[in-house]
Structures are given as structure tokens and as C-alpha cells.
Image (cartoon, rainbow, N blue to C red):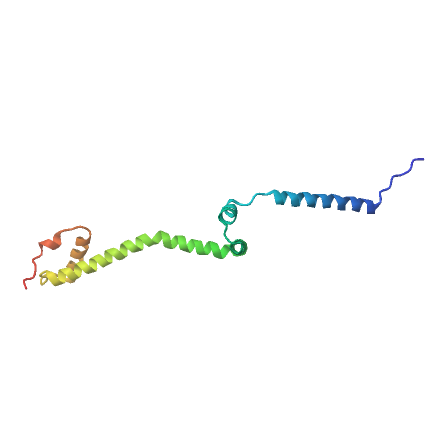
Length: 145
């Protein structure tokens, strides 16, 4: 007769525990061997900034990562709005400058030129023409004071 080999569950658990314990020690050693990030090395080791600042930076970094992880939809919406405004801003600024130029040119024509035979639409046309580089405004006679 052959004897059956039986395994004791307690022995198996002890072996598992010992293996995990060794792995934990090895993992901790690997973590200690890691180099510091370059910015920590530069700012806090080489330059010597206070450790309180490092703690604040790391807390802010952690909070920002959590915010990005939890609020992706609102962050994407916000970035979309900012990009949209940045895209249309030059167009809006150009239109505003042209309107300002037309208003100034219109006021100049009314104050300094003889506009008795010219209606409002023609004055607007002349001011627009002037802002785009036209010289028709100089053909109108000046008022004599």
C-alpha cells in the first residue's frame, strides 16, 4: 500500500504568508531605490526650498488629479468654450475695429466736409470706403469756417 500524501492547509497558508512577506520587503526596497523626480531633485534638494512647499505642491497635484478624474465632462465643456472664444476673438476684434473706424470717419465727414447734398447712406458708404483705404472722402469740399 502506498501512503497518500496529504497537505496540511496550515502549512500551505504559512508558506503563502512567508512568500507575501518577502515580496512586500522586495517591493518596499524597489520603491526606496526609485530616483526622485527631476523637479523635486532640483528645487528641494539642490536649491533647498522648504519641505512645506513640497507638501503643498503634492497635495495640489493630488487634488487636481482627482478633479480631472471625477469631473471630465465639465472640464471638457470648459475647455471647449475657451477654445471657441479664442477662435472667434480675432474675428470679433476685427469687426469692432472696423465699426469704430467707420464711426470716427462718419463723424469726421459730418464735422469737416460739406454734406448738404449727401444723405446718410452715402455718408456711411464714404466712411466705409475710407476705412478700407479709399480716397473719395478727399474729393468732397471742406467746410469754410
